[in-house]
Image (cartoon, rainbow, N blue to C red; front, top):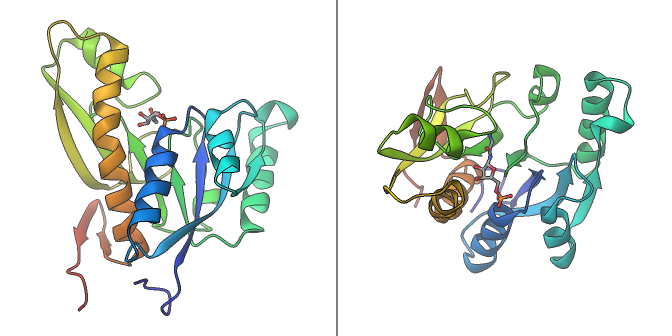
Length: 212
Ligand code: GAR
């Protein structure tokens, strides 16, 4: 099923890291005939990102656009946009992508850029969410999947799930447990987006019933 006249939703996925969320998304799509989406391109700002190798193994086109190869962020982002657009994606999934995207990028896919973040937003935005939750001493953190706006880890929340922090947690152990949650929550939310079931009203996202 898809909201796009019966065809599957074309996804671009952006990664900067190891790409375990990309792998989880690919396996969710591969094991669910009703998912309604396909990954048509994986992009990264880092040529060494593990997610690129995962995409290549899966036979998916990859695009690398490094900020250091461009005179400024505007040129870098325009190039990234152009190279993704060649694959005609309907939506963009940030699966561990660690760069801020401007309104110029987001305007190509309004309410169709989705991000996973390893905390219960609005707590612990930014690149070190797991470490900062541990340092702060909170007892609960978790996973948030949200629509992307121009601010860091800030757009309307689609879904959240809590993860308890244990006394003997390290950043690595806690992040691994959060990723287990992300690996379910991100594909669930991407499926809802792909099926056109997210209704956005300002900061509020409602989930529409599945059509029969
Ligand atoms: C994930 O935990 C994701 O939430 C986080 O990067 C990790 C990527 O893991 N993203 C952010 O912190 C964005 N602010 P992966 O490369 O194994 O999918």
